[in-house]
Every structure is written in C-alpha cells, then in structure tokens.
Length: 524
Image (cartoon, rainbow, N blue to C red; front, side, top):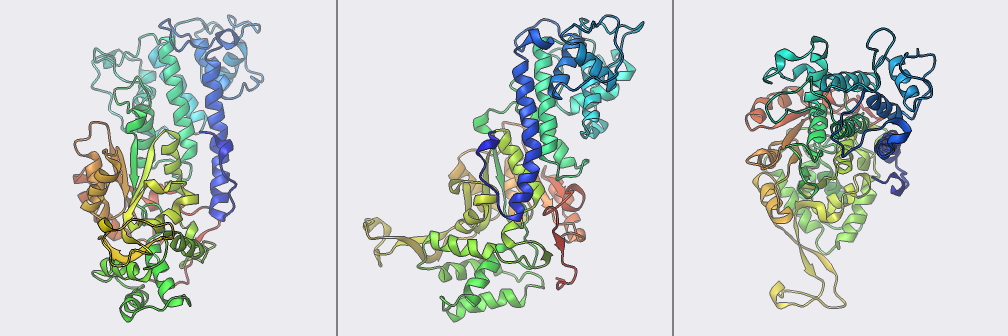
C-alpha cells in the first residue's frame, strides 16, 4: 500500500479520512521496517524466515523492539547474562521494562534459550495489551479440544486462547496445540507478521468500538486467510468482497436514499428539464411520503420514472448533475453534505480489505452511473467494479434501428434511451455477481432484505472460509435508525449464517468528527 500516491483530499469527509489514514501509514511503515530487518540477523539477532532452527527469547524481544522504532530502554534493570555490548541488549531491557518479558531467576534472562509456543503467545499477548489492542477475542475462544491441553502451563492459558482466536497459533499436524514445543525461526517470523497485521488492522479500523464483534472477527479472519502457511489461506486472485451501497456504506434513512433525492431534485428543481405528468407524479409522491413508511412499489416506479427523466442524457452529464447534488446539505444532519454521508467505519473496512489485497465490488440496487459518481473519490472504486440497476442506452443517431442493425458513427454519443432493465436487488444481485464477476465472493455486506440473497450466496458452499454481514440501522441517537425493527431480524439472518453489524454498538463514530443528527428535523 503506497500512501505517497494518494490524491490530495479536500472535502470534510476526505479530510477526516486523511487524518485517520495518517495513523495507519506509520504502522504500515513499522511493519515494513520490522520485516526488512528480519533479514539482518547480525544487527539484532532477528529470526531467519526460512530457518527451522530454534528461535530464541532474545529474538522475540529484538523483533518487538525494532517494531516500536528502537525506543530507549530507560532505567530498566540489566540481566546478568545480557551484556550491554550484546546486539539485543537494549531490546531485552526495553521489553523487560515494559513488562513484556521477565527473567528466569537469579538475575538471569537466558537470551539464547529456546522460545516455546506458550512463551511466545504470552509475550505477544502482553505486547498487544501494551499497544492498546483489543484482546477480548480470547475470552470466547475454545481451546479445550486440543489433545495436550493438560500439559499447558496455567499462566499461559489466557494468552494461548487469544493467540488461537487471533490466528497467531494453530494446531500441529498431530492435533496438539504444542504449547511446550520450541518455536522455529520460520514460525516466529510468521507469527510476528500476523501480529503486525493485527496491529495495523486495529488502527485501520479505529472508527469501530474496541469490542465490536464483527471487527474482531474480520481482523482474525484476515490474519488467517492472508497467511500462506494457514489452512485457511486464500490466494489474492480469489479475495473478492461485495458491498451494497445505501444503508451499508452510506446514509439511506433520511429522508430517503440518495438516488431518490437526486431524482426529486432533477425533476422538481431543475429549470432545464420539463417532466411529464407521470414522472412528476412519482417525484411528488416521494416528497409527500418522505416522513412516512416507504410506499409499496415505489422502487419500481422511481426507477422507471428516472429512466425516462434522464432520457437523452449522456452518462457523463448525469454524473455531473449527481456530483453537483452531492454538495447539497444532507437533510437531518448538521455539518454534513450528501456526498459525505458515508459511514466512516465501513469506509475504513473497504480500505482494510484493499490493504489485504481484496478486490472490492459495489453491488447495489441504485443505478450504477449514479453510484460511480458517489464512490469515485471517497472509496476509489473504479467504474468497472460498480454493479447496479441498469438504464438502457442508445446512440444519438440510432433512431428506431435495433442494436443488431446499427453501427456506431463518428458523430454519435451514447445516451440513455428511457428504459430500464429491472431493479438489481435480492436474487438479481446473485445473478449479477455470477455474470459480471464470475466468481463467488468470500465476503459480503448488506443492510436489508434486498441483500440477504447476496450475503447467503457468499457463505453457502464456498470453497474458502467466507463471512457475510448485515448492517443494522439500530442507532436512534446519532442516526435515523429503528432499533426494534433492526433487532427483530437478527435471528433470521443467523439462520442463514449471516452475521450482523450494529451501528449503535459497533461504530465508535458514524460520519466522523463534527457531524450531528439534527434533533430539530422532522421525525419519520
């Protein structure tokens, strides 16, 4: 991930994102530093990534010290067997001063002593807490099925639970956890790589609450599926994730989704357009019912009317209109533009996946050209990876000729022809994924009944470990959610193997600093 190639960010949302990304860039640099130094054993007794030789206690201290940028050991005590001239002396003293390690008695540290798996787990667990990382994943991790469970040291059990739950340790070929087994230098290098990934991921996802179950599950999942030595490893070419848009990545609830509101603005407020009575009636229906229950069949009526309204426009002209509308104030909020109304935790999640070599697609019921304009800068998703409801196209000189009977001319432009091909929702999303992506995603995210088929498809009979989640609009304090309605559907999602993300409980912030729900706005 080359942070130097990012565009200059100017809008308030982008400035918030830029501020957040600065935090992760330093950690990405630290990871690169730690891994590059692993090839320099003479400097700090670093492990050899290809060696089956035992890793030592000093090696682990040195690797963590390097990761933190070689901090001063301060007034930490010396060990009798760690001379100040040793290349790992400062690392051992620093680690001991931070209570990540301790001696073996009689003032000794045993720096060249072989490192056991339970010792490594304990030190990394302590380091995770020192760094402020969430270690609660270990509380729910069951490690009692390993055949050697009675042989582990009591003081290491909590750390072993965390290490297994976080993907740092897995079973040996014989079914043991092997807590007393010596760690090879290759195994230590792999564990350190996973640990650094956990730290980076935690920072990338800091807009989530510390105990967000979905965030912690995704972090552990990523550590596992990106490790070439893991049984759950997924090759880069098969790391595909799909996201719905409205209600999953951005505001949908107030007063209606973005697509509806830009259509209303185009039809009722655009001096350059004269609508038919039928089109105007649909736009007015949306306005008249915007504080009420969504009218039955309005999705179909809106899509058909919008196709007619945009007839004769080029996709670029529609994008330009959408871009201007994005700069209007988001109703129901203070200090928020419509084009900024993306859920910051979900934006971070997209960046998190891309940092782990995922190819991300938007699969939405919103018309795809509108979505392309919305996500171009905020998410950076290229147009080819936006799948949505389709309007029909024609050439300006085509007239009544069928597509099969006409050849595009030099004077032609591609414009909307006034038709649309049906809403891209429910099973249509699965159809679109099969047609346009051509492979089953391993991660899927939605927010409503229109996304359940897509989410179920991702986790059903997948050759790889797969996860899917529904974002629950259950925050009534910071968003226009419906807690009771959202929670009533959780059991149905669970039956299909679909997890949930609570906006109320899992999002530390929704839109970032300075954005507030407008308490004085009309209530739906």
